[in-house]
Length: 138
Ligand SMILES: Nc1ncnc2c1ncn2[C@@H]1O[C@H](COP(=O)(O)OP(=O)(O)OP(=O)(O)O)[C@@H](O)[C@H]1O
Ligand SMILES: [Mg+2]
Image (cartoon, rainbow, N blue to C red; front, side, top):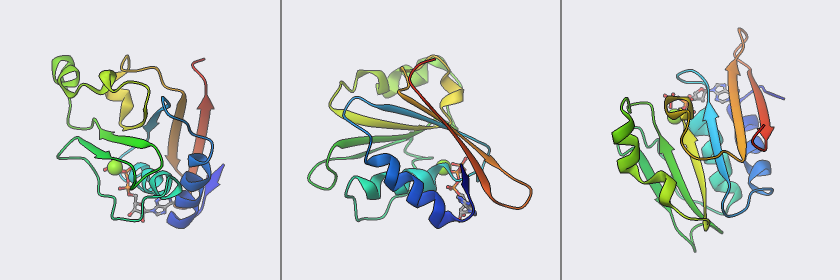
């Protein structure tokens, strides 16, 4: 699908949130500024979060707990990670099945987790964003 604007991307995220359940793992890839964090904002909004969503670039992981969200959400950004040990320390894999995990730059840790959804965002020359979603682990 195509998101022409930031608001389209958020709407896509809100809609996607409605089909997510605890245990889902969403890998989100695309170049710098593609709209990965915007998509995560939409997903969090769809899960009931009304606060400000910031990029976890520096903290690497942000966590959102009920009642602020319907289901606990882990939002990670692996851009600054370059070493397997560092990824392991994050404990992303140990979060159990009671949360939804959103991972920006998941391609930096190709064998981390088992994505239930893989989303690729491609900026187009006109500024629109092409979104490819794969559900399941094929
Ligand atoms: N169609 C669109 N969809 C999403 N974002 C858009 C769109 N058009 C313009 N933008 C703008 O692109 C920027 C996307 O920024 P965002 O932080 O979401 O990117 P990112 O992929 O998370 O980058 P990073 O790799 O640095 O984490 C925002 O400033 C947003 O307003
Ligand atoms: Mg981002």
